Image (cartoon, rainbow, N blue to C red):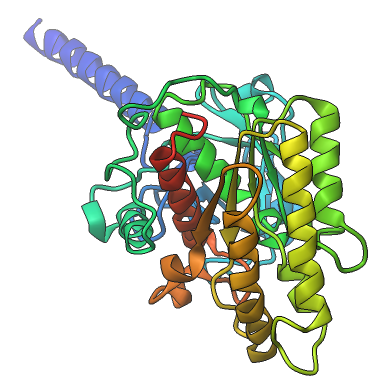
Length: 362
């Protein structure tokens, strides 16, 4: 009789152990799909054993769709050329609205056409982490507000500008990955300036994105934005495509490429004022790697800054040269022009701190 009881106890314990093991396996938060498209910082190990932190999110590098088949609704799309990943693509889930991301999880939402989850403020490294480094860089650039990013700046009226009234225009520095916009939205969301589900309108483009060269592409972006809805705040860059594609015998203020770009910026500021835009934030470039392009950018920088400072509406200058100083290996892609994921985060932080300083879209 005793042996029969013992056998029953052993069977019961085995069943409990098996059930517990199955539960642990199905909800293991350290790998698999659990972290898919969750924000991350490379080197922190937050993606688990299976996924990799690429372009600021936990995903898989890929060269073909088959590599993504194990991830829900994922497709292989071109990557961001960052993080030293050899494969040209990453697994992503595309979306139009937040509901499209429910196939991944209930916490994922739609950002710039792809599903994302998680906070930008990853890790606990304080100023030694990427977010902390970005904040220090923003302070070094002279754009620091009250020293924090977690709430609307003290003394600013809140929610006087909706997310849809913020328009982002510019060239490939913004448009290559659109990560600057994504990080900026998250900073605003964390501060309560943007509600969950609200989005800034990002019309920055990889094509037709010069101030003056080959047409007024950036002005066209503004016109398209105004035709869609009211614009109260413009966040922009411009002049990089002019400097990259144009040429000068001598890179100075008299160079036609430089002078035309600066004049186009002045014209655009005047049009913005006519259209009742309340604030412009102009993010100017860090130093490009090519010396000839850098010479034209250096000649253009003071002209655009002067046009911004004398504009017929409040125009706030954000010079990313100081933000990127000392961090080019980390902040710039291999093309020596456009920001890496870390550079996008640093750029967004500098822009957001300027917005806080001047109570823009808080």
